[in-house]
Image 1 (tube, chains in turn brown, red, green, yellow):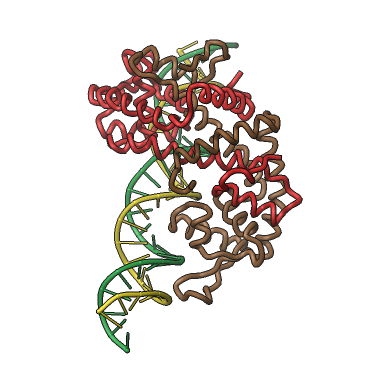
Image 2 (image 1 turned 90 degrees about the horizontal axis):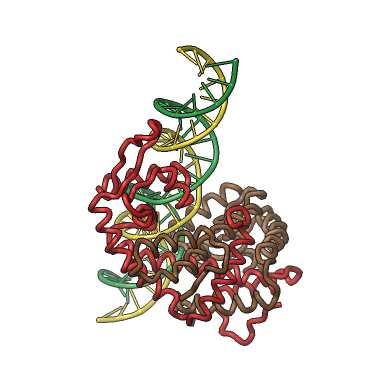
Length: 173
Length: 173
DNA sequence: CGCATTTATCTTGACGTCAAGATAGGCGTA
DNA sequence: TACGCCTATCTTGACGTCAAGATAAATGCG
């Protein structure tokens, strides 16, 4: 059983302590791990959002532009391919693309290989924006993990990789 | 620099590989850690949602009922206290309480100590529901972390605790 | 070749969340 | 006591997301 008597208790320790008092029959040990994951995630999102916001975007828009950019020339993918990379529903992707198209960052062309679909490509403006943002975004990401040295990052990454395979056995074969 | 040549590449490794090809000037090492955090978080949420959904709730409703339950007798708090514990805005809390009240799981009474506010309490139905759900929820949480032995959980928790303090220095003194 | 099935994308409606502002009661000071 | 400020909560409007269904083109079986 994980103990935290030797650490400064945080918000999540206080929640666990309440449960231990009210429901001593339940072993709420995993709550520490799970609660901290959730809070860290929320702060990491907010931290990355700062860069997106500074360029007039949000995570959703950034995600699409970045996917198109890193796909390489000609920086164009079908909506289906974007759905696969970003793991959102088709309705969500339509919404994202509508917004980006209205902002002139992407354009939709008919798909020459499939009359049902289209191809989404970065405009020059979209390419310039995402390429400029990436340097800032990556620097920001470094700052979010710079409380760990390289060995610790590798250790943490190994644990997370196993955890991801555990909670998502489907897509991590 | 973290290397993953010795591991089966996953979705996030593929994204990093694309960036390395397209923008070799950027060191995208942290993307592994950050991307995996995000995916794990999303799968943990979905995993916990299964229990909530089975009882007709979602994370938002569960969060409120659980906060009231673990507060101990008389299982009642002000909306402000609930806002502090759950870290959502007042508008979000109003919305959550409206829904729970309509379902008969909580009730709002005028606050005898402060005419501006109210006190939110679990109804008998709400208490019974959350008390029953907790056993299932905790068992579910155990299953979400059971890819780690106790030592690994402690090791991971120590890393996450430091990370949380790093990204949220305000509330973690 | 023709029709049934599958696939790609968009549309609709319902949520849950937030930021900002509206109310209304409490509190402190003169 | 009176007045201005502070605080607790609710309201409003805009998002981003999803599930489910609609539409239209491609595919393949007989």
